[in-house]
Image (cartoon, rainbow, N blue to C red):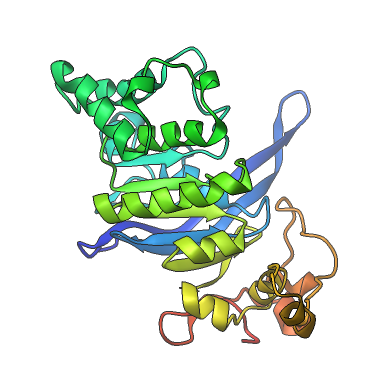
Length: 327
């Protein structure tokens, strides 16, 4: 087990999550979908780590492994000093009070038959966080924290707008005073006009309550705004991780460079001057990833060595880690 500093909330070491592929009447295993394939990182207290990459690269799977909704195939997940990667369910349940999640879909993640107050009340009751006589006051307090009127506690989800529903989801995540919140694309299903409000709310709550976020997204502009550090994923592996400002000003991995070149710039004159990097081909299947560097079939700088060598993350100074032998 790794020795964590007191400021480390969660540490992931060589995490792998493989889903079996089965065929035939007897469901014989014929292979694996390598959703996460050897990922390591730390998240410090009060920090936001952004996790970005194309759809299907394994971002959400990492979040679910940390929450232990999935039992990892290999590796360690050390939450507040305890390795939870192989703990049985009965021992994980008490630790789950310290972690929570905000889901992508504010429409599907709320029980349509429960009132907004009950949705927040349930985790408080399950984990015995508040005396029953004080529970309504606590729910009202949480409503106020996320910018909702406590008089709306008796309404059901369909009586709220999309932005208000996501605020209810955030309130539910805050109910048990978690040390870590997994934000799984929390704004991608919202109108653009509402997205900035939710991002600002998350930042305000982090400053006020000392929260720690793993912010999963594919919108690079949003991730830059909210994150202290950013990890870039490609086909189950982290290819680059660095401070937010440094990653955007000095990307070293060819995949990160391609992603950043696709961010729209509102100034048409500046947009004309920059070069757009167009990647060839499609993302390979995680059921049959390429040998060596997973990115080499689409990389502009790939050599024969890239097809054979699995690049490990190397420190290029200032905690800027890159997995590329050409960097």
